Length: 409
Image (tube, rainbow, N blue to C red):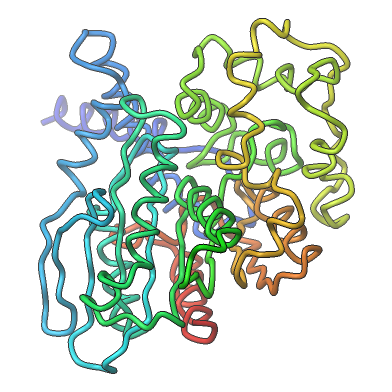
């Protein structure tokens, strides 16, 4: 009995040590965030172990583990009909409300996960899309684009574009009864990146007879040139998205050498001696001018006069400065042709400033923008809705997101 008691205490102490993290006092329900982060770290450690043992690539193994836990079958209910199909050749889960108006609103949605993880068929996204379909009387199409490391930029972008063009096409609109005047592109994190890139491309395409009325971007990732924005500096160790992890996601997405990780983290890849990064380009992500004082706080820019040799960085330079990968770098004329926008950001998220700068640049281009910021929010808070650790800020953010769609679509 005594041995069992001692073992229980030791195991409990070990679990508490693994779960506990010092977090900002203002973050919403910190213990729930700790539990969520511990779950993700567990998945990552399983992937690392499998990679070390030669079972498979760490990301692929992690995705398999997540799929076992989270991916669910398409299940219809009394209010929403759910089917798995393809959209422009890309696997897609469709959520159709039962009854309601003859012509529905339509939303094409791209999931997050650093272009490498997760799926639109996960329980969390399934719950989100069902709720959207039911409350908005809208057809929601959740797209499963290809993932890294099997696919790298621009393949995820091509999938997003193919699905979006098909979504707006007359045959798909007629099949699902969608109103051509009420179509939206949306996504979170890496999916927000794809949604922004799609909105830019199709907004400037004069051959399109039907275009998106709205773009809704949830804590989007929009640039890879500055890993020392105030939000990257402030939140580099805040779960669930760490600065180190975001650099790794970018390297995977760009198909770059993983050894460049310290180069990214030091901003050596965007030093002043890199000829590909012009002064005009730098101005598009100059947070000293684009962010308000309350976000800049005491942080200082990290700009290196000299960095890594051009020969080391040059192979990935075209992708780093390609607006299809980094929508924040788009010209004002391109931004001005995108639809009205909703941009959600969270205070305790390394990507906060990407979203805030993009919202500011859209406004400067004449786009109507709703900037929805959560002072107690953290990366991923809106989507993880099927877990016991779903936070109050997650509930608020989802309700406000759907309310905005209802009022603007």
